[in-house]
Amino acid sequence: DDPGEVVIITGEGDTSFCAGFDLDALPQQDSGALALAPDAPLFTASDALRRADATLVAVLHGHVYGAGVQLACSCDLRIARFDARFVIPAARLGVIYHAEGIALLERCFGLALTQRLLLLGETISADEALRAGAIHGVHSATDLEGAVMAVADKLRAGAPQSLRAHRDRRAKPPRDRMPRMSAQAGTQVPGVSGQFDEGDPDFASGRASQPGRGKCLGD
Image (tube, rainbow, N blue to C red; front, side, top):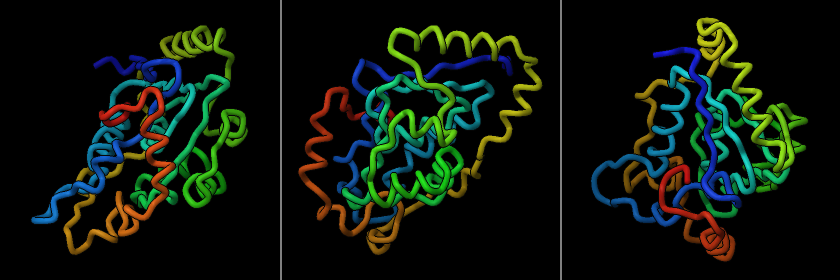
């Protein structure tokens, strides 16, 4: 209940902040009755971050893939190690991003970098993200922890009610806008397109074999 609370979000291990969504879950949707869209857990987590009564600081390093980019954008501040790389391979995999997710990306990265991420599948470096205002600092591996703690100390020194009021600028989409899908609408829903199975299999298998790849959302 303390509006002055600071929560620091990091990735486990040294290679990735987040390896992204579990791609194995996408083609396995129930073809029967209506089911939640495959990206529903991601939006539940992202929505929970944006509604949290705390200041959220994402500490980014290594690979920041797909869903990990959206989760980072759901935080108030983003501080990166020099080797952070942002990648959203949606076009290569046949995955469709939800409009709310795209809007969140545009708020952080701006239109041009969001188009490079989604349409071209390009990798955005930490320095590029810093210049675009998507992240708030880039540091060496040895300086990162100290820089994060300094930011946390500044936040804790602020007036709690002021922090809460300014955090309210976060995007907070209504819960009832969570997408739903059916077998008949499968090629149109956010999350997976009719071309998912025709996406780049080498890219998908290579990403799945990376260190830090897990089965949990936001891993």
